[in-house]
Image (cartoon, rainbow, N blue to C red; front, side, top):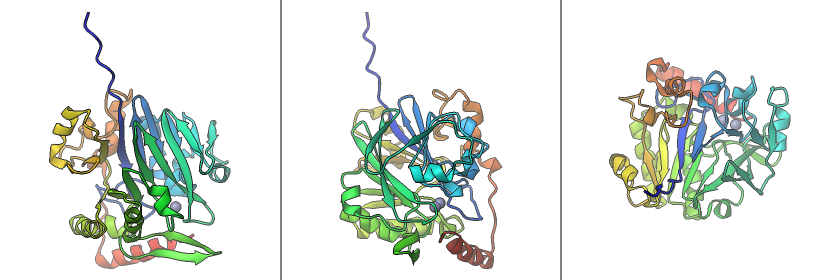
Length: 332
Ligand SMILES: [Zn+2]
Ligand SMILES: [Zn+2]
């Protein structure tokens, strides 16, 4: 009798959306920042902004975890959810009007196990009205820190130390979008600042989601070059995340997968990034909603289908106005 091969334990990330709370969208940054963690059969969605309201049933997460109660992170729950929703008490209290049946409380600084994945919430400075957290997330001996909105991360060197990849706030690359109010910083730290936090903590790789007007309305190639340079100056690899991009934790036990993604691999780093193939957008492999684990795979393939993407063309003047308005919108 042949022995059944040991089950390959899976732990990978898919950027469902990478857009911040801005007026424009593009094919690369089409929907509000949200991350899907796939761990064996679990599908944990982090954040669920209003862009996801209609698509939530198709994503079919087994759990939703929220960073804070801003519309671009939580208002996709306006019709409730079919799974437990994890959040700090402050965040769930702000969202009591939503018909969520199963709220689960995430205490600050304590490890919580969600579908076999460890989450630890850290309070970050970002908003007075909607207090935000970042999550240190770990499974299968690998880890990441996810903080899509952050003006200041207290004790960054300690909090980030030992994580394989930092996934941060891409609202602004070099210009701070920060105000000081009631002794706290609100808004968004520049990518450059966040890379310095990573440097202090010896984090080797960083990706940026929750992209602002500067990124969504800008020249992606040029901005990625800027990010690479900012990263190199701090001895780490940095890049912008796009909708549909995947992060694979490569520990040598999956040579087939590693070979398949060799074209986009960054060999010397612990994390390999597979960029979404925009030329074959309907490929479910890159949709992050693969047929093997989604009963609603056909519906979910739509999530990344660019034919439906509404790419908004904007003039330079419009863009300047949007960037200005965005700066104001984010400082609450
Ligand atoms: Zn946001
Ligand atoms: Zn926010």
